[in-house]
View 1 (cartoon, rainbow, N blue to C red):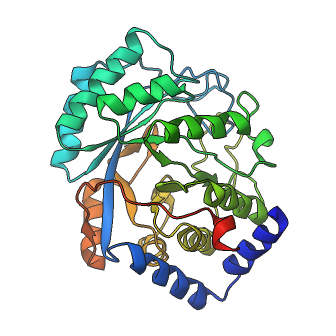
View 2 (view 1 turned 45 degrees about the vertical axis):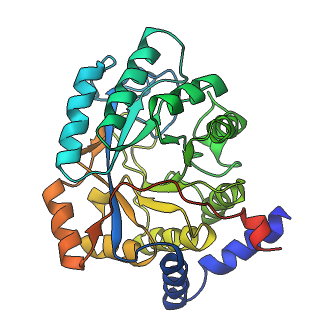
Amino acid sequence: MATHVLTFIRDIYELPFPELIFRAQAAHRRHHDPAGIQLCTLQSIKTGRCPEDCKYCPQSARYETQLSAEPLMDAESILARAQAARAGGASRFCMGAAWREVRDGPQFESVLAAVQGVAALGLEVCCTLGMLTGSQAVRLKEAGCTVYNHNLDTSRDFYPKIITTRTYADRLATLAEVREAGLQVCSGGILGMGESVDDRLNLLRELASLDPQPDSVPINALIPVAGTPLAQQAPVDPFEFVRIIATARILMPRAMVRLSAGRTMMSDECQALCFLAGANSIFLGPKLLTTPNPERTADMSLLTRLGLHPLAARESKEVCPPVAAVNS
């Protein structure tokens, strides 16, 4: 079955470019405002000294990078950043902590207080804090968290070449706990880490086969950081990147497909093609956790030039069935 599904996905990915974009647009328009873009802000609330060995990440304690570690921000400081994000047009505020896993105790209680405060501002609240238990997921939802981000990063086969301190099964287990708690699932991956096209398509297969499918799918282009093992990786071909966006849109038509890290390396024309292929969310602000991101003025100018508009905070919507069911 897995081989059959991968062949089906490869057939989509390899369509002539105009046909691929046409099919992605058709899927997009059935479920989304074709001119609407969700604006999010991602704030690092605890930076660096992570014990994991993710080869792409400057926050790993195992690599010599120029990153300065910072302790967990207090709830009041996080709330101030959220207020600024809302004033800048964001409808979703995401909080990321460089932890391997959530641990019960004062720091988690502080995060829960921050979540409650941000939710009270009328923003959708997303957290990405590493692995967590079912009870912790429930507490996050009760505090007002809407979404939990936990990326699969890459294919099951390529994953051990990028990370050895946490298994693929660990990531899937966290996603299951998140969904069981009633939180929306945000999960995607990174392109440009040395993986093959089949690895990228297998990542999409894993995501599309989740039941139900993720509510949002961030697609990142690797930002090579000096000091990390992937510092010398070449950038992803822009058309290959757009093809993955379009394929993700076709496979997961109801999901928000998030054009995430790496936009500073993309031309306006490449980003426009991504929107045409079905991407309908970006992050605002000069940083994504610790890596560079376009300035807000540049993003708003691009959206204006393209005739696109920000989406307001939205309620949860039905997600579509897994890709295996779609293909049966």
